[in-house]
Amino acid sequence: MEACKGIKPDIEMMEKYVHMFCSGVSPWGPYEDHVLGYWKESKQNPEKFLLMEYEGLKKERRDHLKRLAEFVGCPFSEEEVKGNVIDEIIELCSIKRMKEMEVNKSGKSARFSLENKNFFRKDEEML
Image 1: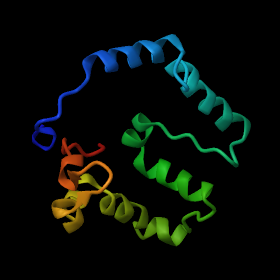
Image 2 (image 1 turned 45 degrees about the vertical axis):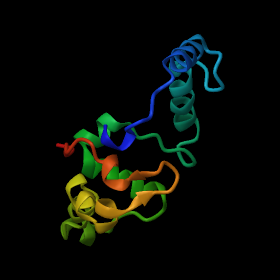
Image 3 (image 1 turned 180 degrees about the horizontal axis):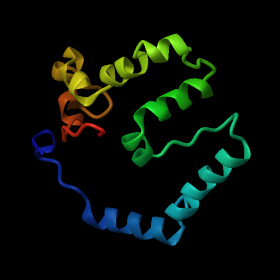
Image 4 (image 1 turned 45 degrees about the horizontal axis):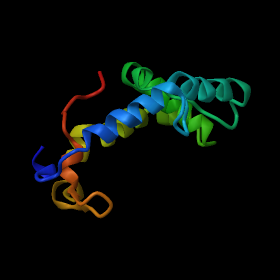
């Protein structure tokens, strides 16, 4: 990757971290336990905790956006649904639209010292 020229990853450190993570030694524990904890919380307290998975978002964008709006207390009105507001929001949040924003073409992340355009590696829309 061009943005990372000159940066050499510490393979030994990465392997050690992966081993720790898989062994449950890291602060987050085993990945399955980590995810299961969030899932359980979303079932026990659905009014306080919303769990949305990438695969669901990819397959059912409209349903997930409606669910998110309801969760934050701003459900779509029937008029908004009939007026295609949901589809307009999906378009505004599309990868294509975000890549076209000037800040994402020329801006730079202060935290990572990378150009913002490098955060858009793959142009894959949710279908």
